Amino acid sequence: MNVRRRHISAAALAAVTALGLGGLTACSSDSSAAGSTDKFDVVASFYPMAFLAEQIGGEHVNVTSLTQPGQEPHDLEISAKQTAQLQDSDAALYLKGLQPTVDEAIGQSEVKTKIDAATLTSLESHAAESGGHEDEHAHEDEHGHEDEGHGHEDEGHGHEDEGHGHDHEHEEGQDPHVWLDPVKYAEVAEGVGKAFEKADPDHAADYKKNTAALVGKLNALDEKFETGLADRRTGVFITTHAAFGHLAERYGLTEESISGLDPESEPSGARVKELQQTAKADGVTTVFYETLVSDRTAKTLAADAGLRTDVLDPVEGITDDSRGDDYFQVMEANLAALQKALGTK
Image 1: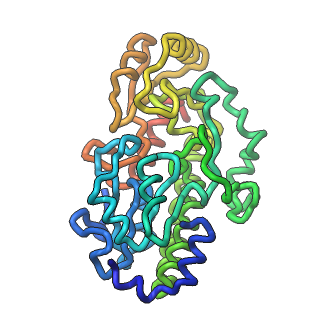
Image 2: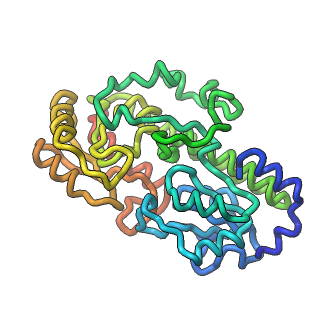
């Protein structure tokens, strides 16, 4: 067990819990088991959570990811060794609803600081986009993401706004892929930073500084997407599974997925025919697939409809096949792929 825990006040840890806060860098090592170092030991559920922990924690944290590079996170089964790592860690950072076995293991563990990213921003259902075509601006009226809504000071982005739903449980059907929206990911980062400050107050100033730097980079990425996708020929794109609903909503696009939120499910013949019709009607040029899931269905649909294929990476893990070495590089590669597919000028 990390000796640092003895110096963290019970009140600070209780405050974190009460708030519901409850390729990797050199700060992390798979060989350094959680709880075995003299740093603040964090077990993260998968890459987007590990990336936040490392960026915010810097030199003060040791991060262990439960999901290995190249492993499909939805399919993760927790091992006995990983369960032991959880028990000995100072904090667990996860996204409830994405990995059921992780949710169960963390829920049953005795780790005192449990940080659920799903409580730090709003999750919405994007099932309609995966099942049928919607007008590309249909989301704007409901969620207030008009042109002004992209600004970081509008009420829809406020971190204390009760409308964010930070107090509700993750509900079935809600889309957990919030890290693909830079604004929502920044909201999660701010919550993680506050949790680290409370759980490890000796390094609170560094956590605050690192969080601000990360949020600044995410805001800049948001601006790149907003500007880069503003002038386009079409706003509709087809993906293998519905991972990009939050991103689509943020930038006024429409994602049409082949298999819904489950990346392994097979589409019906009717769905394939519907997507072929959508592609023709909306000038879709490309069917996107991802690196951690089979591209067979995407390539079959593309061949039948006379479309191209390309990678749109959900950034669930960094491998040798990824178009970048970290979250920001892969997201910029995603932007370039979308610009090409949507015919931006």
